[in-house]
Image (tube, rainbow, N blue to C red; front, side):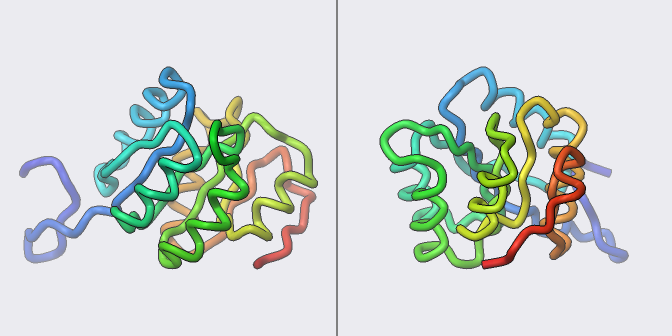
Length: 151
């Protein structure tokens, strides 16, 4: 059979559409390569700054947005705020170098469904994606004691 996920009748299941938002090209490539391990994902777009992220989210209406916080033109928190209004069904997974509990809490209050620290991406990104697309929240292991408040 060809690559992809199939139902019991052998028909391909629809893929989850993903937008990757990261200003550093090397980390954007790394993120794409990790996400490519999940056949049920399709990367439909990329953005290198917060304004572009908002525009692409409105245009593409992705199922999942992997969003950095430290973005030029419009920071990730403000981008998340705007994306929630323009593409309310898109789930946001924050992947950032920021690791303070306050930042994590703020990300969830702005609508994030998951949070992964970049240095943990190799271990946690796919687990986070599966959890979020399955309807759960995901907080990386370094925040295991953190109780997140939902928006």
